[in-house]
Length: 147
Image (cartoon, rainbow, N blue to C red; front, side, top):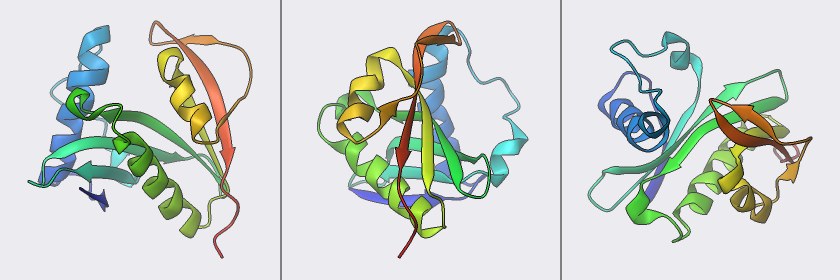
């Protein structure tokens, strides 16, 4: 498996969109439509690929300010869940973001994924809330500054 940062609009990006759509958006009735949000072109996209270069996981980072980023729509293909793939992807994204000078990462974790984030060092920040009709928790992690 390999991790990497991908470029908006290229074939890898469209594979990541399909993965996000299939496992995150369609099940809750919010599929991506014909046009994809153009604002994503400025956001870092991180992926993990299997040995045949198929994207099996992805996450998008939205810069909130000079030191903080929000990770969103992290997904691992169901065939690869509970095998450490998500942890590898998350560690890679955190390291890349730290090297870019960011210090804090926030996520809106689905309630059923909050345990994963806790195990990787994220702390709950506030009470449960609803987002896209699903219970979520805001979670936060300090990644310090790049050395």
